[in-house]
Length: 195
Image (tube, rainbow, N blue to C red):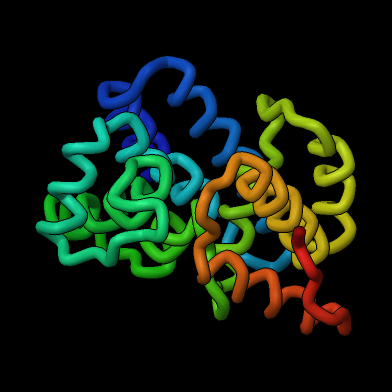
């Protein structure tokens, strides 16, 4: 049995059915994007399966685990929505003996991102944003862009996310802003002014 399938079976016992289907969709999308953009497709599939390992934990448990693993607090606090990636990577590494650091990085960074992300981490980050069950304004355009340019698609998804968060009065993670600046610079653009 392939490693990703073994982990998928373990995940199925851990999360709700909608979260499980989302993870399968991210895994399939990550596999295809990895083939397109030069990352390891099997590692991308595995990271996609595991990326939401800690997504359904209550905020209190996420906060306790983040403190146990000495993870930094995010601008929005110790909330599951922000920290489920780093917490999942820590649980997989420390408690379950998972040791593929490239896959762990992709899992850790799939929510907020950060400058200097590996190609694998970028693929998984984008796969989470554009997998086929996602429905939000502009997602079809992002899917098309993802086939043309990994970095352009990431930048567009980040801009959209940042605009949405600002419209909600939410704090924006510095790592996300720095990642967007890196992506813009790589495309020869001045960093976008996001109001």
